[in-house]
Image (cartoon, protein in one colour):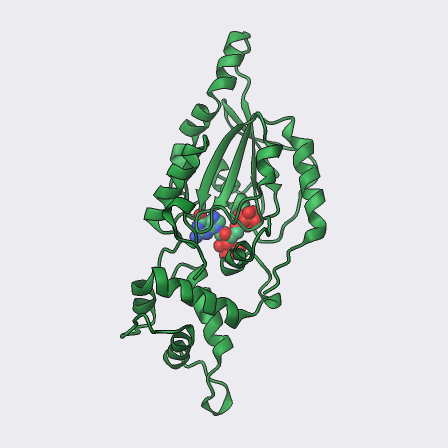
Amino acid sequence: MNYQWYPGHMTKAKRMMQENIGLIDLVIELVDARIPLSSRNPDIDELSKNKARLILLNKSDLADAEANRLWITYFQKKGFHVLEVDAKSGQGMKAIQGIVREACREKIERDRRRGIKNRPIRAIVVGIPNVGKSTFINSFAGKACTKTGNKPGVTKGKQWIRMNRELELLDTPGILWPKFESEEVGRNLALIGSMNDEILEMTQLSSDLIGYLLAHYRELLAQRYQMSGIDDGTTALDVLTHICEQRKCYKKGREADYEKAASVLLEDFRSGRIGRITLELPAENGKTADR
Ligand code: G4P
């Protein structure tokens, strides 16, 4: 499948980041906990050089709890400060202030040595579209300061949200574009709903997802669709046919409507109704979205 995504906006987004980065002490990078690597843009490391870094595994409520722990260790080993959060419900948000202070310890020390008092840490929230940046800023700031929605866009003019005496947040999140370095990355982004479904082949995508679920989350799949007898010989088509029957996805004349079954499955997955599922694990843990 050919995955494409707003290529024309990439340069603009990068420029916005470059313009703002000079004002920043701390980069708070949101990734989607279900695909922590596929939802990153590797340019962020170059753009944030010499800044304090905090990675938030957002939407951790939708991801596998065990996988969240593995990813935390993975990013910590790479020298990042990292937390799992659910910006929508607020879960995990209380720990942020403490970890921000830890991540910025050097800057705080430097200010103290130079006799600078009460200069707040200035932070920017960055991430690819739909990863939860606006939701996070709203939740963290405790009121609706920015609009949420899944359309990427940049607000004009810089404004700082004063979180407390120690921390100011740029009200406009930095938008990064994911890097389609492999088909797997494209597929992962498509699976979590970060691409326009209209350009995707939904039955192919759902078959890929079923293949992955059969390999790694068989129980959850069986439970969700009350499908007994799943074994190593079960195919994606068997599962889609079962969903057609179970959810009455028929075209006229009782012909199975596989496209409808595919969107039922994808919608169930994206909203967490199948269960908490992570699509990629750190390489050393050996679970990727490949079948
Ligand atoms: P963005 O600024 O990075 O583009 O993302 P935004 O905050 O607009 O969030 C994109 C979608 O992700 C929103 O759903 C939002 O509610 C959801 N979301 C954000 N953080 C979390 C989280 O931690 N857990 C879960 N489960 N969902 C999260 P939406 O369907 O576009 O809007 P809504 O119907 O939820 O308001």
